[in-house]
Length: 266
Image 1 (cartoon, rainbow, N blue to C red):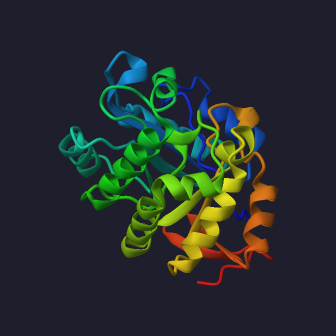
Image 2 (cartoon, rainbow, N blue to C red):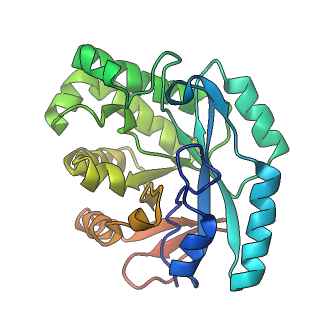
């Protein structure tokens, strides 16, 4: 059994050119959920709306399923802003997905990976970004997973103690909402091992467990084949070190899978 649904991005996302077929060529027996970007008024795309071509996306999935004999699933990464909330809900109402990642990428003026972030006080960036995640979680936008909680912190150099000092209250509110909504908390291996934020995730796991959280997802945030399922073994080891022995896998429906032997436990 494949433990994880790595949730890569493909040619149907504004920031990827990787053909979806390439993931299948390299991993022909793995169920793939390509989580394509949904971002309205996107600062990194000259404030254009980046909306997946759903009809073409579904046709491609159907073609690839027949070719490779493996079930493919529809996924989306929702870039939340309050201003776009109604548009997001309307789009999701018309276009069903098997896996919905909830994310915050921007504040309506700039994306948090743009260099503007470096011109602002660190505490201000941290508190604003985590508040935007809280706003997303308090919204009626449907979701299954909270994606890369540290996206807005990737340009900063923060220790867990500093993050707690700047916004420990907001971290706690964020995690309480994740638990309340029954979402899975994503361990984003790109954030952890490419951007060097593994210590932040290590501390977050402890905090999440203290809140009663138990649903975890692992995603590599791949935008090209080379990043597919990157560092999943390391993320698995980290969870096991915390006594976490199951992962939530998303395919036809959420299911609990053992990290030890791959058996489904629910």
